[in-house]
Length: 126
Image 1 (cartoon, rainbow, N blue to C red):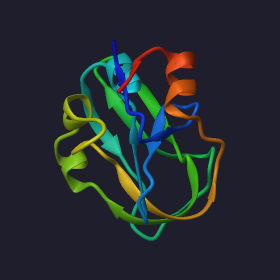
Image 2: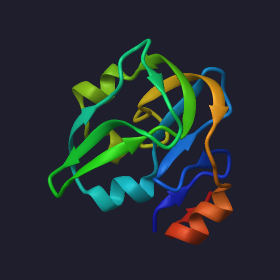
Image 3: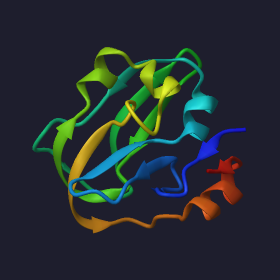
Image 4: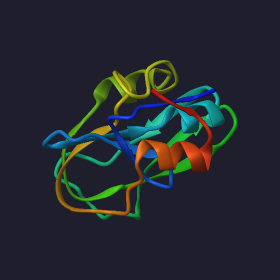
C-alpha cells in the first residue's frame, strides 16, 4: 500500500505540500503508483504565477498523461531540475528527491490532512 506522510498536506488531485517557505510541492506516492513508470515531467518555469486548482504542468508515464494542478496560489521560486532530467525519481522517491517545484504562496487551495487523503485514496499514514 502507498505511503502517505503525516507531516504533509494534500490536494484532492494528488499533489502534496510541505510547511516550508517557500512551499515545496510534489505528487503523492498514491499518484506515482497509479501512473506507473514516469517518463516525462513538464513543470512551470521560475517566475510563473500558479493558481490553486488550475493546471500548471504534466506528468507522463508509460500508461498515461496526467495534468498537474497547483495546490496553492503564488509564484514559482524553484523547479527540481533532477525531476525533469530523471523523471523516474517521482516513482523512486516522490516525497524526497522527487519534489517538483517550490512556490512563494499567497493563498492556499483546499488541502486535506494525511488522514483525510489516505481515507479518500487509500494508503498508509506514516
